[in-house]
Length: 64
Image (cartoon, rainbow, N blue to C red):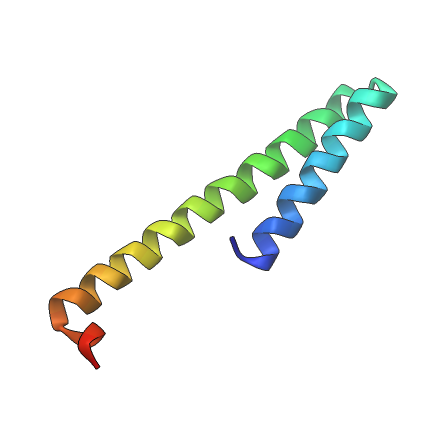
């Protein structure tokens, strides 16, 4: 997980918890959305890294 994704995920979870504690459904929903967005970005970045690794493997760049 990249730093930005981790930061956004933590901030989202905190915002969601704050919304729950204060009874503010809008803040709670915003926090949940922010955390989910960070999780999605993390998965996309993982997929990109996997594809890059596969391409390097096919090219034989991993032997150097």
